[in-house]
Structure formats: structure tokens, C-alpha cells
Amino acid sequence: MTPLRALRRPGVIGIIIGLVLLASGGTVHADPAGPTDYRTEILSIDPPTSAVSFEVIGGDSFLQLSVDPEAEVLVLGYFAEPYLRFLPGGEVQENRNSPTTYQNADRYGSEAPEFAQPDAEPDWVTVADDGTYAWHDHRAHWMQPIRPAGRAPGDRIVEQVIPIVVDGTDVDVTVISTWQPEPSMIPAALGVAIGAITVGAAFWIARRNPAWAVALVPVSVLATVAGVWQYTSLPPETGPRIIWALLPSIAVVVSSVAGVLARRSPFAAVAAGLVAASQLLVWSFVKRDGLTAAIVPTDAPQWFERLSLTAAFVVGVGATVIALVQLFSGDLGTKWSNTAT
Image (tube, rainbow, N blue to C red; front, side, top):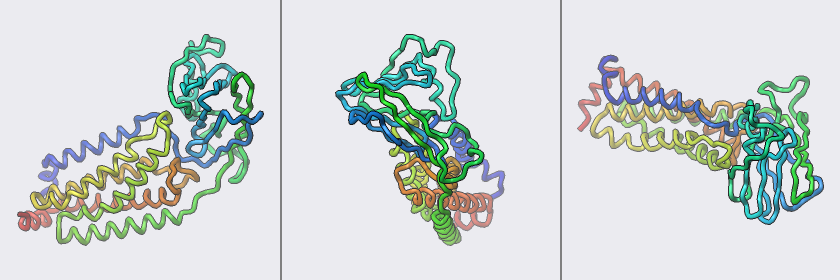
């Protein structure tokens, strides 16, 4: 099969279009929690109160507040204006006339529209109904993409007070953020080894059978578990990305049916391998920052996240090479067409 004839196959054209859409669609999203080198913690709540409970989401990305159903809490913005209020019964409202609302749309701050002023009459809009809400709070994390000058891992780089009002009482919530040491690369190395073994198995099968994509199933499942785990670890309002779970899930399905496809069309089986490989490759590219960052925003063990990331990347690259060589190889195509039934 010549390269030109291969490209004329509808399957190849669909794969190329799908890759373009996935790559472009992966950049259009909200501002979810991302990998970070800093860990934010609640240092103190003064005066102490049992009506509120704070949790930091994604290392330092989001501050989550849960309020007792019988309490009323007001969170003040950066200009001491009403920003969020938690009403008795669980309703949570956001002030759309607060400049803090718009500045919190992005981790590093966004411009607020002219109408959003600290002294404007609040425009309350319900954003949750279970007494729990998470938001970017720039008082709770390092506000620059570059690392703090003159500091080192282990140093405290942020200490701020977030003012709230609990049932009419002023409460100061003090937060600190600490620079974390670099993660161990041992899990990543193990992932590379697993990926290399998988690619070797796929290559060995490919010399005899076009359904070599079935060898990608274990790593695809590994990546799916990591992606679903991360997606379900984050509250909806923090914008978790569905492609974390979707891309490797597609790889699982497509690689699993390669054997069935091979009975009808060797080309379809190889195309399935290319589709599965592309999903793993794009998935690992989207999550690449998690390889070297100290904290990945997931409830999964950090070692598991890094192992699955490198395994998926190696398999994605290796399987893509195998598929492209076969799609453009006239000899292999002829051999498979003679053995297909």
C-alpha cells in the first residue's frame, strides 16, 4: 500500500481529523486545579468555630468552605466587600457585583468589569445548594507562575488572613503556603519500563497479527483509572476536565475491539491501534506538568499518577510508530490481506 492510498482510506482521514479536534479542544476549558509546587494549609481560625470547615483543593489551587446548615457565613472579598454568602439550609450565593468574583476566574487573577465595584449593591446569584463551595482565593497561594526569588523548597512563601463573618461574628482564617520539594522520579521510571514492555509486546504481536492493539489495553485501563480518579477528586465548580477520563477510556474501548476488527479488515485493526495510541499520547501531553510538579490535584497516590502518565506516553509514542509503519507498508498490508477472512 502506498502512502497516498493509505491516506485515502476513510479511517485514516477520520483519525487525523479526530487528532486535530482533540488537540484543539483540549485547550478550551475552565481554569481547573493544576499541578503545583506549593501546599496551602489552614494555620488558624480565630476565634475558633465549629460552624465552618475549610479544605484546600489541589495543593493550593482552590479553597473549599463547608458551612453548618444552621449557620450563616459571609466571605469578604479583596476589598472587604461581600463576595460569597452561605445561607442557613445550604444555599450558597455569589455576588456578581463584587470585583473579587471576576478576579477569581483565573488562578493568577482576571480583570473585573467596570460595574463590579466594592461599594456596589450586591447582586446575589445561587451557585450551590449543599453548603459547600470552592473558589480560587489569591490570598491562599503564590500569585506568580515563576518561583519566588531568594526562597527554596521548604520555605513558607505565603501567609495571609481571609476574613469571614460567622453568624455576625468576625472570624480571621489564616492560611500559609509552603514550597514543596521535587517529587521522586522512581514512579516515572517504573512507568517508562511498563510502557516499554507494552510496546515490545505490541511489536511482537504485530509481526504475526494486525490485532496488536489488544496489548495496549492494560496501560489504557491504568490511564483511565488515573483520569477518572482525578476527575472525581475535584468539585464541579473547580472545572475538572472531562478529557482526563474520556481520552484513555476511548483507548480502552478501541484497543479492546482490535481483535474483532482484524477478522474483517487488517487495516481497521491497525487504525484502531493508531486511535488508541493517539488518545494516550494526547492524554499524557495534557497532563505533562504533573510529571515534575510536587503536587498533582488528585486523591490518587502521587506515585500512581506519575507512573500512569509516563507509561501512557511511552505506549502512545511506540504504538503510534508501529501503526504508521504498518499503514504505509505495502508488504505488511499484503500479508494481512492474504490472511484475513
